Image (tube, rainbow, N blue to C red; front, side, top):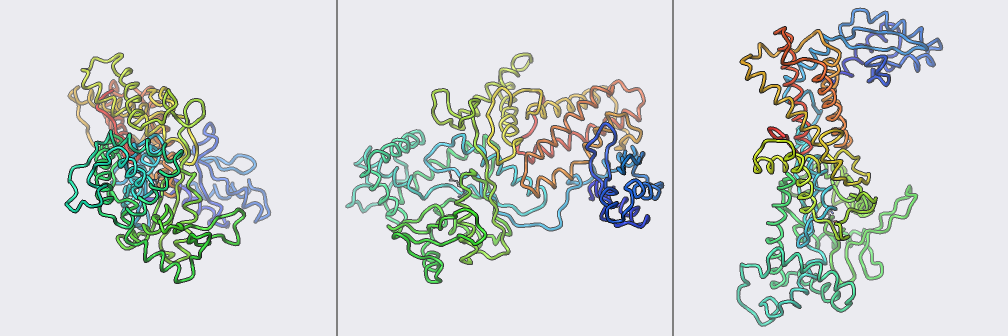
Length: 587
Ligand code: ARG
């Protein structure tokens, strides 16, 4: 379905041509002076230069060709040559009606891509912390947006399960429990099925090991050796590694589920391991990689660069694989498994250089052809109110679990305050509303920007927040329920065609749905969906306050109101579903 602006522009194109001017000047936009008009066409200003006459002359000539238009109720030329527009009630209502009957609310794309989205990026054996929030939340929204637009999308968590942290854990485990069979070189039996640690033990082992490696050089070297031996396939270390993986993944799944984040694939860096040897060899054989201080590197600096882009290191001097190596090998694996048109990486923006190096190496060495687009969606830091990276009260790293509990508690206190609901219901609702607070709080910021995590602001029921959006949906539900309880029925699916002013404003917002979603899709910009949803909720609340919906005595008019409510609810629900949260029955 064409966007409303496209439809309007097309009608002006005909008028520009009929008046003897180029159609390229016909663009209609949303008004930047909503006090004067709803839409505008400013093309006469630019056309005046080409045709060497006054803009007003062109605007008047064009407008004289528009007198049959059923799209606009008002077309006014104002000095020096702007065309101010108001849409007609009937056209607007018809447009929203058509949109509401479309499964995708009028959104469409020319082609359907196959896309891998690499997000989440949790590291096994380390608890999820606030730094992982954004990758999960933004990545999930992007995945849902692409699915909504009809793309074939595969979301991959891409676990960090192959780096030095594995060797560190192995060595720390050796210190803590030297008698385990994994450390007995003469052991020949099967390794136990059961892990020698629980998740909470595992979560203590890593920080212990990591701290020790910073002060104990010998320990660090041992961990590096263990990492390499693991990567080369030492059975005892592979057995420990499998334990770490299974214990961690079980816990991660729970955590991601609480965030309503679902991956299609639970692959990790280790899954690309089988490609590494051949890949490195072929890069060397084909002259792409060369030795530098014992390591193997690929030069990726280009002539047009105005800053230094260091070479991409694909193998360390001891032969170990690095972060870039596993990302490159993963590209090979994804190409083999999915042959995607696009791979999108959602990661901290401080990793931008890493991805520049990886993308350039992939293209340069030919492991990926030009058909596949590699995109990096880098996000900023989550800060506390002091503007510094978000920490716990005592200055520690904020675990994601704790953050979620804090938010849910804050919502619980509000919900409990003035409602007559059972404790159980209040808890369930707090979870649903809490999730909207976290996700909306995050997604409403442009991804690349840092933002301040403010529990109080995020959980407010008024203002630009997730709970406010949910509150609006709950309000619609409650009106609908009362309407049904009054014994009345919906007559037909028609919307009104003579509109009150707030009713019209609401329809104008609804008519933007496809435009806004498609823009967010093209720009990988979920924050634009948030901004839209907020405007839509606001327009609805304006409508709600200005019209007596349930008390309306004109049955047909009330019917139009109720149908408008249903369309608004669907638009809001569709949008928040893309953002990755949903509304409770009541709150
Ligand atoms: N595990 C990484 C981290 O915690 C993020 C992974 C991002 N994805 C990737 N393909 N490198 O920083």
